[in-house]
Amino acid sequence: MAETPFVSPWADPPATPAPPAPPAAPRAPSLIVNLLSTALLFAWLGWQMGWIWGLAGVVGVFVHEFGHVLVINALGFGPSRIRIIPFLGGAATMPRLPDTEFKGVLISLAGPAFGMIAALPFFAAAWATHDPQWLGGAFFVGALNLINLIPSPPLDGAKALGPPLARIHPLLERFALAAVGAAAVVWMFSRGSLIAPIFIGLGTFALLRSSRLRPAARRLSWGEWAASLGLYVAVTGLCAAGAVLALPGVRLIGPLQFLGLSGGHS
Image 1 (cartoon, helix red, strand yellow):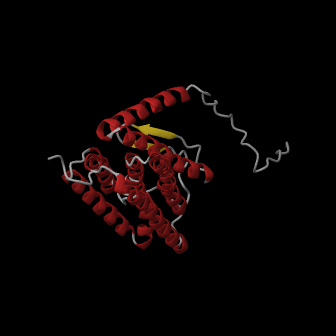
Image 2 (cartoon, rainbow, N blue to C red):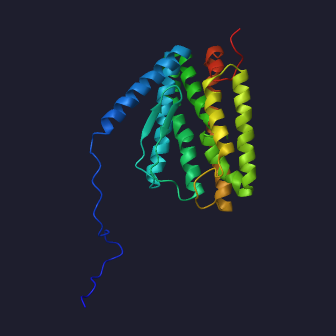
Image 3 (cartoon, rainbow, N blue to C red):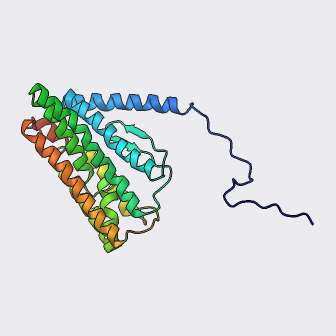
């Protein structure tokens, strides 16, 4: 009888390898789509609130999503890419899902935390030119990241705060996220905002229909639970501090109405 050859468990499987993916073909359309989406996002924000706010929105979205990309790749769930979504913002792709809930929390908080770096050039421009309009850009960056931390799907806040709530009780997570989402939708609609509450409303509706709120992963230990809550509070405080520092020089009426943070037009 022929002797069976030894195969190392670390060796590549003997199966026929899959055909390689096309090298650069998919990237050209993706780049074109991202450029067009970025132009649309800038034009729309600039039309609504002025070119400084439009610039802040585009830069803020890229830096925010780049924070997600850095941590996704560092934790081994990449390669991740940034996709710009017209009229809404952006998203970071994640080919492999986190194997622990704590890593998911870190990925979620990386965007708002890293995203505040985008406010620094606007603070610097306001200091160098003595023009308070630049503070509007810094405020917009802080406000966008702060809104993104609201614990309502599909925002980062739900992904960061959901696992700690579920560690106490799964129903607490579902109830809290649904309640915050519904309250955010009603409040923003009442303030004249349209796109943001529709986006949050769809995420809340999907949450109510789903039987599982996130993919299966190792649950938080109690130490990770405490760290998750501490990081969420710290990142929220960072974003709030950036927005408050820029608040004195901001012309608020139009931009805050757009964000759903003030009354409608008279």
